[in-house]
Structure formats: C-alpha cells, structure tokens
Amino acid sequence: MPFVRIDLSKDIPAPAVQAISDAVYDAMFEFANAPPHDKFQIITRHDRDSLVYPSEGYLGETYTPNFVFIQVTWNAGRSIDVKKAFYKAVAETIHSKTGLRKQDVFINLVSVEREDWSFGSGIMHYAPKEWRT
Image (cartoon, rainbow, N blue to C red):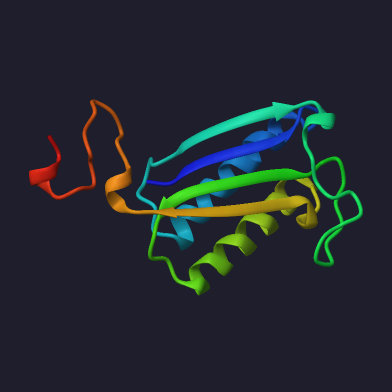
C-alpha cells in the first residue's frame, strides 16, 4: 500500500536512480510490512535549480546538489521504531549502492487510513467488504 514519490537531480545517473527506487521498496518490505509486488512509485528528475533545500544546512545536516527527496504515503499505525529502522535502511542502502551521501537523503512519511486507497476500478480496496462498491 505505500505510494512513493522520489524527486532528484537529472544529473544523478540512471543506475543510481534505480538503486534509490529499489532501496525504498526493499526497506518498506523488510521493515514496514509492505506486501510483495506493492511497488507504486513516481520518480521525477529535475534541473538542479528546481530542487530547493537549505544550502547552509538544517538541524546539523549539510546538503549537496545530489539531494534526494523521498515522500512515502502509507497506512497509519507504524511504530517509531519501524520508522527509524526504515529511515536508516533507506539512507544506508542508497549510500552503499550509489555513493550518494546519507545526509542528502530526505525522507517524509505521510500516514493515511486504510480506506484512503483505491488501486483501480474506483474500489476502496482496503475497506470492509460492505464499503467496497
């Protein structure tokens, strides 16, 4: 059920983009109990001047033009420990597979209710059966 948006520079090579996509999915599957094959992602590559972040840094983190924005919409109810493990796994995997700095991996989680999903046909797939029509 996760839906992922990844925004990054056009300068990041295609194999690194694929590795970022896979890192997010693998961490969702391993730490957040995402179902197999539940990989819904939009990856948007941008000119560097359209990715805005604090070049002077924020909360002790510093950033480079290889900054990667990751936003995950998923069902509410995951624990803080699950979220922390997810953040860490994504940043470390992206770093190990692409060489991008962990500091350049920005992650935002959006929690929604189970009935907030339709995977097609106008059906509320995760709602109780009596609500699905």
